Image (cartoon, rainbow, N blue to C red; front, side):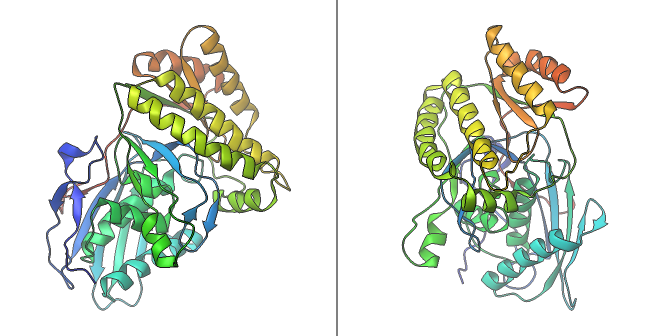
Length: 366
């Protein structure tokens, strides 16, 4: 086990997604500290992650690219509990149960195994994004848990290593380790499991002069009838449209990287919209179909198209859920928000810009 102490992103670097940082303080066993608190933000994929080639290691079939948001943070504290017989997990002040508890405890087991520390932990997580509604709550949740748990257990690693670790909790969490725009490498399909694991991580994406915003129209904040994991598995296994979409996604990613570098928001938006609609088409072609699009979703999509006809540049993207995110220039964000708010028929609308990297907070701070 490495003796390197964990590196975290400095607050002054948080919008760049750089990998430089300050070292976490050490305290409790194995070079860790008795407790650590981290804050992370969700990200919205502009080139989608949809489909795993390895369920256990959470290795995706394709690369993806996202924008980390500056809203909806998750704050998670991990405190070691010497002598405790089990982990204690609370989410928004309520004891975690069922699948949510199982995923967190399984993740902590992975951290303990890597750190060589057996102590159980108390985990307190406060999430401000609606859970299970296609708004990337698992991305911020597991990114915060990865950074806090790694610090508390004294697990060494830089931002790339933390990205690989967060991936094991939730694939999209690998991208929330970084601020701004980040791309998640699918990694090498060949080689040993350990080599495949090491090859799959997120990294910052160079961006030119682009002042982007995402307008988020929450048409339904409730839990989804079909979880993302189940829908992803069904789509990969049964949809005849999946493989063609995955192949085209590679070209989409290359085009978006180039457009971001030259600051071409229009091309970024065009690629993001077609990639998202293509992903939902693969779900509709699954057997049986997975349909997240609601009547309100379609109304918002129609309004985005009308905005472009009115010469207001705006493009839609959607994750695995009914809610619509609209990419636009920051200067147009309020006009776009007003338009989609009307179309969303009373649903909540939020404006987000590029957000910060996951970071540790001083102990005692929130």
